[in-house]
Length: 435
Image (cartoon, rainbow, N blue to C red):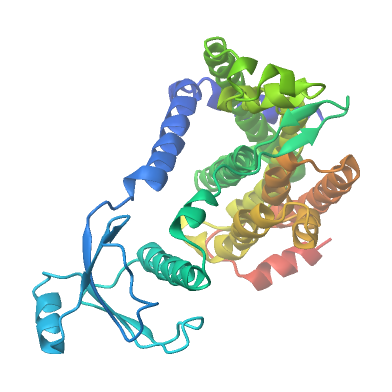
């Protein structure tokens, strides 16, 4: 145990005192905020195309003929009779598209064709589909005797605001988009840290092996202690950096929050109509910062640290064994792909299945598989996960880590002193079987 502590201390202090580590610890929160802020901005506004597109439209039925001249950024014009004229104008890009509708049964639009020179995007085509269906639906309602005035008066505005009941029975605003964003960021942090710091352990083992330093070290330290010291030392480096980010982020969050005070009077609900629902009315006036501050960050961070450590320890023990077995970094790729695929798969699952149904069966299954649970579970945390599931998943994760340390130590013990020959998966299996 003393040898593990000595190696842990050396690995930790060497990296923490590094100038790059210190600079990135303070700079990273700003870079991450800028990165995600820019990505969100580009996703919501940067990709928006407001170019007016001219679309010829021809139809064999007055019902399917779009009556409005301009809808959104589409300008609809009556198509000329001569098809060659239309084709020539499309070819010369004077017209963006020709919407030719030949459907006789208007409730099944399966013969509508959009003729273009340059393909429209999925979003643009979806918008055109929606415009056509809405116009046909409106015309059918008018034929049923419903006037345009009545149609306009029935237009629905606003939407559902989700509210949660907390442990005290009070009502508070709930924001699924915010929870999804936090879960995604936490999963991304674990994903990045496992590769960054796990690779750091692997490179350290390769460096010591190629420099023949390890031959001196293992003469006084057991390979198992050497591997554990490296894994735990680098784990503390990553944990230190993460905690520093949390403190800095909370400082910025609550600092900004001081300038934004919740105003119940701006909820849009008359005071006399609030009655006993003051909690609900006040929650509806909270903005993004107040909603963020209302999340159970203590629980979120606690569970995150558990799975951050479990995921890192599991993967870094595997990376350490790979680093000890290979002779140079160019030999690593054949072993890294099979090892990293479960983590990449877990991240894909976290983005798809979990976002759609964070408490569904698939999400629960992948939360229990140790190679995917570190990223899948943290995405589910903001949505509320029973402690029984968290403890079961964490137990499986750390039990798998202990098993992998035992397996990796057997590989490390033999591989760290092997030179010249490129190892194979068969060699790994043979080294694991050696007593």
